[in-house]
Amino acid sequence: MFERGEYLMQWYAVQVTTAHEKKVKKYLEKQRASGLNIGEIAIPEKDGAPIIPGYVFVQADTWPEFYLIGCNSRCRVIGKVLDAEMNRLLSINNNGSKPGPVFKKGDEVIICSGPLEGVEGIIVRAGARRSKVSFFNGEVIINADNDQLVPAEKGLQQAGSCNA
Image (cartoon, rainbow, N blue to C red; front, top):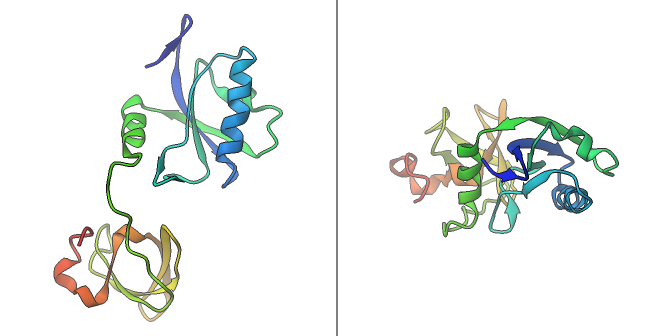
């Protein structure tokens, strides 16, 4: 754990309005500069985009709810985060992996990891990092990270390997 002054710092997850992560971070940095006991403020990113949109992670000596009073964004402290988990999140930042595949509406895909591994579906709505996939004749729609999907033409033999 990080120590600042005589207090032991703990990581906290703060849920914020999506796309306001940097605004909240800047606000907390001003609070820290004015003397509040705030340690590091982190927005884990990969390729310049937040890994967990809508969350900022703050090191503080106490529950940081009152540090957020006056912030012009919706903020809610969710709870403590273990140091090991924060280290894992922060190490993801630009670890050299290639970006996931890009899909468009109507593409046939196979889910290659998770509980639905091997299920074939069709992209209903494509996104840069996440897509909505329809399966069971359109009766079920799920959100899936693009790195959990492979194009159906690559076949089921690669469904267990998302890096293909």
